[in-house]
Image 1 (cartoon, one colour):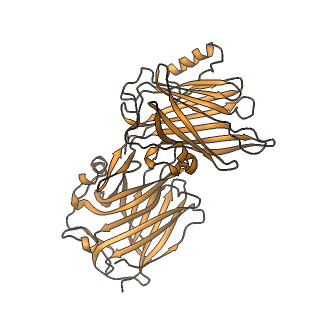
Image 2 (spheres, helix red, strand yellow):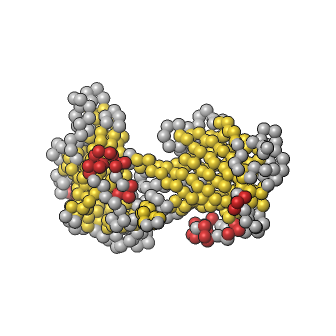
Image 3 (tube, chains in turn blue, orange):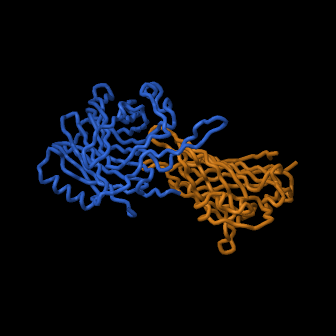
Length: 272
Length: 233
């Protein structure tokens, strides 16, 4: 069996709008290869963790991310309007061998409308609906597909789906964006207001998890007279690890105007 | 020619996953050398069955395995080199399995090819290994370790297999086993000289050859099933 050790690491940091002292404390924690990272605005709190599985330098890998959203007001956190992720420098997305899915196919037919070998990853989480008499939590799923590049930039289609009590099917587009140092790759996704039940406010997110890429993904490709197995590199662990680990950062914009940014460090592989 | 079978379910009341076993001999002649095929199906009460952790298959008394040249292969060798890394004579069977797992909104299925090998003796107890190799969407190799243990009447011996968790992708549940088909020995049309073969018992009990399976699952539940291979005409 391939090495499937997961090395998730989370870290807590202060929000961009917080006092200067808090980021310093947070940076210290990160330098110690902290296990937890979070940020808080006046009402929202964000925690983030990321990991490579396996984490061998240069290996095809699964990049996984978990995020938690909460509010200090006792109410659900404000709905998310944008999520931006910055991944470590040196992390590659190698789409050779994968197919692409058209947004219209995903919108019209759901994941079944996309070629199997266009799949980039999976995910899910829990959403929150605030009703006058109660707060409802609802599980949702995420499906990721490669889309055709735009001006040389990667795009991922995100199919978000929930069944009950509110039925939601959304197609979002995660676009590659420039990443500041020390990051090497950025993706940003705009999230529209998610209406749920009549009279209820838009849905909020309580938790999310995403896993993209894979250590051993392969598909059969038809060739004349048969088929051949095509191995997908997908996401590749950086060949070098900075001394204090692989840096990642997530930034979330909320509908109430708050922006939270959290840095998380993935520990260097033991054998690096 | 496959023997007719008749199965009766006997799942415990608290079981969340149901099991059915379907045995067949080829040829279905008393005392004949050939193959025994066992198909075990798992069905979840709601959605996917819980992943199997241990499975015991009880075999009828008198069933034999003819091994002209005794060779074995270790689990470590199988993991490292696959089926081609083991002596041909150590292979006693083959099969296939269907694994499924939930990921995102989708049910992901993977067909797995199986090879069964004799393992080294553990003490004086025979062992076997089942090598599973899937190719797409995940290129995965797993090895299930098994032992042959005595079983009380009306059975003779039992095959006990430990199944490791089969991860899909991080943060998603392990894969579930939907069906498992194992053929031990070789069917008559493939029965080469010197090949390993199952020997059908020389006499058939009233009601047929008894088989049973007992499985335990990752969620702590258990299920069982009984089946009978009808006596050859």
